[in-house]
Image 1 (cartoon, one colour):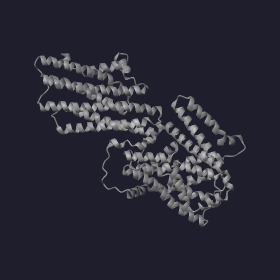
Image 2: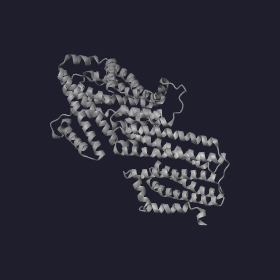
Image 3: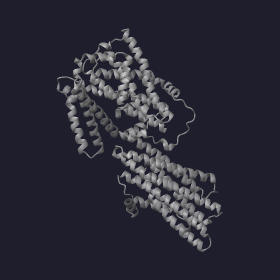
Image 4: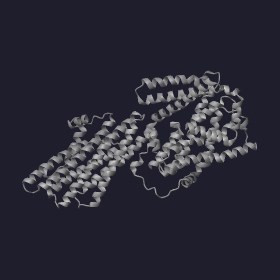
Length: 592
C-alpha cells in the first residue's frame, strides 16, 4: 500500500465521517418536531423505553447522540435512571441500521434493477436532488431533506473510496497476518474499543471494518471480537459527557458501558469455547468476511446481548449504584439548573425543555403575584411576604438561566420552527419576570398599610375587589393559554386588559371624589395609586404574553401593529369579549 493509496484511504474516511455527520444532522432537524412527540412517550416500562431508544437512534443515526441525550435527561430530572436503561438498550440496537445501509455497496448483478440498486448508480441522482433541494428550495423541510441526501451521498462515496484504497491490501501478506493476530479475542476487543473510542462512533468504525473486508482477506472469526470491542468503544462519548453531571446521570453512562462490557464478557468466552469445540454449525474462521456478514454479526451480537440483559434492568441499575455510591450529600437540584447543555446536541429537544422550564417559571411568578394580591385584603403575614420575596429571586434566576441557554441555542443550526419557538420564549421570559417584580411592589404596599395602621374605605375596598378579580382572571387565562398553546384563550386577554385599564382610571377618579368629601386620606391615596399601577401593569404584561403567542402563530412579531388593529375595533371577537368583560366587572357605583 503506497503513499497515494494511504492518502486515498484518509480522503475516503474523511468523506465517510463527514457524510455521516451531515446526514445525522439533517435527519435530526427533519424529525425535530416528531422527536418531541416520541420523547413525550417516555415511560418506566423497559420494553417501551427500548422501543423509544431504538426509534430515536434509527432517526438520528447515532447511538452516542441518543445516549448523551439520555444522560442530559437524567441530569435534568426529565427521566429516571430506571427509565433510561431501556432507552439505552434500544439505542444500542438502533445504531446497527447504518451497517445494513452500507451493505448496498456489495450489490452486484447484470439486470437493470439490480444495477440501479448499486450506490454507484443511484447515489449521483440522490446527490443531484439533494443539491437542488438544499440550494434552490426555500422550504426549510426540503432543505433539510436535501441535507440528508447530500450527507448520504458523501457517506457512500467515502465508503467506495475507502474500499478502493484498500483493495491492494489483499496482495500484502503482512495485512493477512495482522488480522490473523486479531483472532486473539482479547486483542480484537482492544483494537475495536480503541479505534471506536478515538473516532467516537461505532457506526463509523463498523463502516471502516466493512470497507476493509472488501479485500477478501479477513475472516468473520477475526471480526467478531473487533465488533464487540466497537460496542464498548462507543460508550466513551457518554462517559465523557457525564463528567460533572449529577450522580444519576453518571450512572446512566455507567449503565451504557456496563451493558456492552457485560454482554462481551458473557458472549465472547461462550462463542470462543463453542468455536474451539467445533460445536457451532458454522466455522467463522474459514468464512471470508464482507460488508453483509459484518452487518449480520454486528446485529446478531446486539440481539443476543438484548436477549440476555433486557430482563436484567434492575441488576444494571443496582450495579450502577454500586459503582457510583450515593453518599447522601447530594440534595434536590435547583430546577434552574435543569437546562442541561448536553441537550443542545439535539436543539429540538433543548427547545422543548426550555418551554417546560419557562412554564414552571410562569407558574412560580403567577402564583407569587396572586399571593401578593391576596395580601391586600388579608392581615399582613411576614412569612407570606418572605415567601413571595424568595419566589421573586427564583424567577429572576429562571430568567437569567433560560435567557442564557436560549442565546447559546440561537448560535446552533435549528429548524425554522425551533428558531421561532426560541424567539417566543425569549420574549415571554421578560414579561413573566416583570410580573413577579410587581408581586414585590404589592407586598411593599401591603406592608405599608400594616405598619401605618391604615385601611381602605368600604367603597374603595369594594371597587378594588372588582379590579383584583379581573386581574386574577387575566392571570389565569394567560397562564392557561401559554401552557396549552390555546390561541382561543389568548384572544380573550387583550379585551380584558382594556377593561382593567378602564377600571384603573375609574378607581382613581372615584378616589379623588372621596378625597374631596373627606371620605379618604391622601396617604391612603398614594398607596392605592401604587396598587392600581401594579395591577394595571400586571395586566399589560399578560397582554404582551398573549399577543406574542398569537403573533408567533402567524409568523409575525409586530405586537404594536396587532394591538392597534384590535383596539381600532377591527376585530369582531375583540369587541364581543370587551363588552362581556365590561358587564362582568362593572362597578356598582357606576350604576347608582
